[in-house]
Length: 207
Image 1 (cartoon, rainbow, N blue to C red):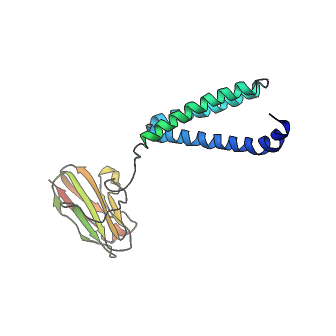
Image 2 (image 1 turned 120 degrees about the horizontal axis):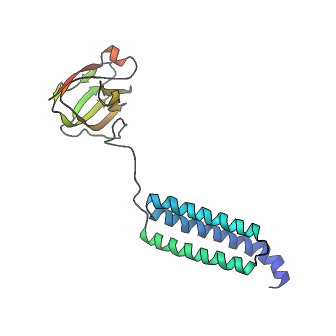
Image 3 (image 1 turned 45 degrees about the vertical axis):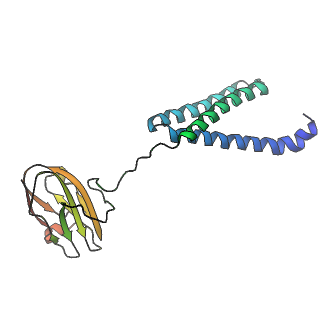
């Protein structure tokens, strides 16, 4: 290579552009692979890729007399393999991404706008009493809902059930969940500080 070309063009322009392009291509290919393979395998792939980069850096540091052509060949082969795998992964597409939260998670603040048919509904407003509540219901798997028309948070807890965890909770909206409960008479209440003492409690019998 002409020394003048190397000094004026290759070193200040072509080399940085080539390195940047290689980094972007590496990142794109690796991201396609990680998004295509199962989650458990993607972690292993990321670890292997990171280990490869560290090994190459270690070899270069320890073997300062390694020739540039040999290093270039090794990096090129690895890059071609990664880009090929990335292209295959891109054609496969992104794996299904799991979403957490939302309707049906017990104790969660589900973003729902309608109450399912047959649900046990506790009504609430700005007063510290339930405006409506079921007195009896069949045992087993049941759908529980709270319909709160106020801007004040209210919830439903069944005493002694699931460690007194909040089943449904809402502020100016609806929350729904599904539980499985044994036959018996239970006390329900709102666990927000002061609400139970003010009257937000009652009994329900599951038979």
